[in-house]
Length: 336
Image (cartoon, rainbow, N blue to C red; front, side, top):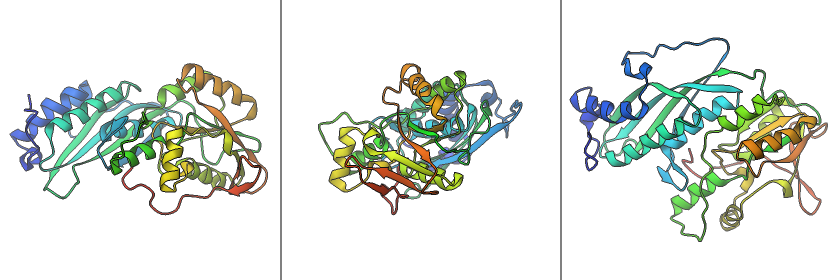
């Protein structure tokens, strides 16, 4: 076994004994499956019908935060991109770019958290790569992933919003961005605030099993709720009306936003998704999310309107209206 007190050396990426030992004792132990164990140059996959295909890179800072770490984030983020297209996550690739001197003990924690998160969706890592770069070239660890999933519910698209569709959010917003902010700034608040980082396939699977007619679905990552809804409004050429008081936001997130001058609607999420669907299916979708998806705060926050095409309008608690625009500038560097 790898000595937990050691650090990554350049030789761990050199293709020799050290690299082989690291891969066999850590990555293969955590991600073990027959396809990976074949050790071929490419994984041999069995695919039938339409598939979804996605890729992502993860460079979060800090690497560990309340509610997760870069490894859990990499798996959940990739699985969620597939799930948002109505696809069951099946196969993932995973590449590690590791800085010389990185703690092997920390790497083991990260890899084990990835293996645990994979169990939430049933997906498997079937191929990967490891590169080690000199000190100062990677800020610890970067992870790149690719995911493939079998599409179960086709025709989910940002272009499918229709007049009087209802907008649903699966839980309270802004948690991931707020948690990263707390970790980055070293804030010690009397709070149990954690990132919402989680795989969303179990929730989506329940909606699909119940034949909920989903028009559009998106996890609200960088740019948060505001980015998702503005993209939808433009892609479908519709207006979206939100009721501000109906949008669930944790008190801790509200407090941090007031302290730093942020908008919760702009903050990143990593386990929260938004759905657009016909009004007659909305109550059923909320009930399924709350009862079977462990999304107790799932709720309706607005609807599609035949006005303000391409814009999102927020109705404030005082009855006034304002446009909710795309976020501008860099709110939180390295959130994912």
